[in-house]
Amino acid sequence: MANALSVSRIVGVTANLQPLAAQRRGFGTLLILGDSDVIGQGERLRVYTSVDAVAADFGLTAPEYYGAALYFGQSPKPKELMIGRWAANALPALLQGGVLSTSEKTLANWTAIESGGFSIKIDGTDVTVANVDLSDVTNLNQVAAAITTALGTAGSCAWDGNQFSITSATTGDDSTVGYAADDASGLATMMKITTDTAASVETGVNAETPAECVALCADRSAQWYGVTFCATSEISDDMHLAVAAYVEAAGKARLYGITTQDSRVLSATVDEDIGSRLKALGYRRTPWVYSSANKYAICSFFGRAFTVNFSGNRTTITLMFKQMPGVVYENLTESQAQALETKNGNVYVYYDNDTAIIQNGVMPSGAYFDEVHGVDWLADAIQVALYNLLYQSKTKVPQTNEGIGLLTAAASRVLDQAVANGLVAPGIWNADGFGQLEQGDRLDSGYYIYMPDIDDQDQSEREARKAPLMQIAAKFAGAIHSADVEINMNR
Image (cartoon, rainbow, N blue to C red):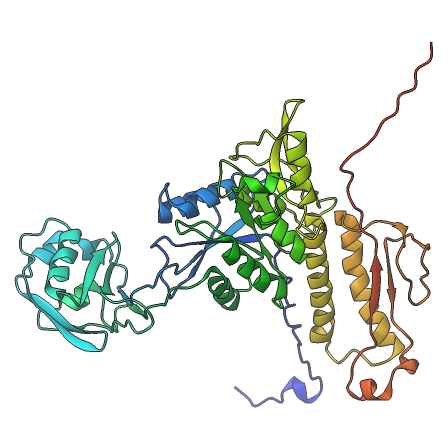
């Protein structure tokens, strides 16, 4: 082929692909923390999209399953749930073998071994497994039992239907198990507990307080928004308050839910119950529910709240008047209902018109749950919108009034969605004013954004390439929870 000059000598073309935008955080995922021996301490968290998947892992009698059933039992159903492992007691080190295929599970492979073995280091000591005779086993549980016998006091072996595991006899963070090394029998390779068989090692874990567990899970994942415990181990009021203190102070907005069965919350003369103590602390991220019959009732409460899709139209809700499927309603006296309301608690309660509803949909501080939930979404959505404006710009957002306009336009688009979903609505501004906004002015759009002229910016902030402070006034749409009617009749 004859030589030819490239057309790019005359016309140069470069294609630029805009980077994918940063995603908004989700505000509809609950994390249930339990102490069942299902999720490994190394794995810690699993994501579920149905109660069937939870049942497959935990069975139908675990506390985690009971909480998941209430959560997914809501109508409409939430989309996602996370379940995490709480080390309520110290945990041993674990060597988790790889998953065996159907052919690898074939019993004939195992009965062919009459003198199997391997070496493994447990708690710093070399342990030799030798002379394991599998010729008479009838299932892989018996294989695990034979290896447990050979391990002696060092540890134990288990088969879960898919994988073998070896556990140290000790617990805590000094407990360790290494990978196995084969002898001539190849038993360790068959069990997939060597370094090249997709095995994994988990160091032992010291017992955790509930607050320590929540802090660890917050570090592991930003995916969850609400958290509660569904466990066999009891959690005291002081433990609940320690978790609440962490969640209230944490940098990322989250919620901690509590179910109490302490009937003292129904008494106006008691101030030592969990509800009274949370209210005294003024917490706004720790909703609690009273249920005499169901210790996991808060999962249903969260399940209804977390169905809200903030990207839709008229999708925001108030939890007042909603139902809690799977939770038996309470029959309260007027004085009990008033005491619980005074303590800013929530309850699924029966009314004399043959209906049962959630009452009151509030946080311990008295703030409404839907407002805290909505503001968390709004703050995140505006943060992500401004970040994406800066991140996706092919050049830059100039430090000019034109650039300021781009920032306010990005925030406006989010606030317009807040109006569309029903969080924000037009109304009278009854707080202190700023910019051109005065107390008593009407926000016809539901919100007002103010950023000062760039020419008035302090020189040090300009040199630091900071934008002037953006101030936003937004009017809650609110919700009607009660009404009075006066009927006048004339004969």
